[in-house]
Image (tube, rainbow, N blue to C red; front, side, top):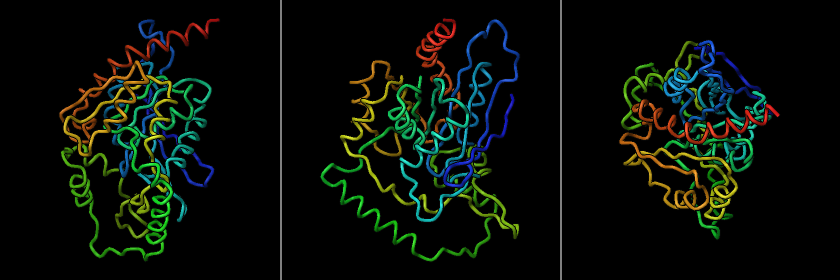
Length: 318
């Protein structure tokens, strides 16, 4: 497997750290297919290592796959937004568009695999650029409403006040020295059901040593703030209607948070290719039940990704 570090500068001055994964197997006539390009998007307070074991299996099984993973702003080893900026859906969407353009994938179709907030961001991108996405795999999250339409603006006002209050407080100082073992334990405690191996992998990109050789978490504390603009029922329906992609939802059979039933009903109503699978595992089941998740993705891609690939090949031969 060929793993290339590929970091992407953003218009706001920061850097998104990422890697591009390819299979190092020589493509034979058996795999005489166009390259399948996929972007993996991790969840809230995670980093791209969350998706790495699953993606490595997909690459290993499919020599024509090319997958890009990146740490979203404020996560992992990527830059933090300037103080006072909102880690909003709009900002994350803009960053993702910058990633797509930097890869040169805005000129062709690709797919998205997203976990948790990464799945939500994938849906927002698929609605904003409906002709770009072939397939979307949403792992244990979907866009869901947070407030009713009549409370939309007052909710924004409340969130702005909470944000300003949080940002004006003094930074916390920690007296206990952080160790890698303590960081791993914190990762496990905050992610119920995760294995020791998965916790260590996540922690590798969640901590760093400073100039004094002290270990600290790399995440931006401002990520704890709610996005200033919440989703309403109408906005969720608009997102689902705007998408043209084939979408697979893989959820936990006993979800950590309530399953977005209204969104699922909308996807069934508007998307003939929508499929749903439940896996008996924790929220991070894509790290603990890797084979099950990979098998399900491959089954779905065999049905819908290949159809699009055939169409693309036909167009390229014209």
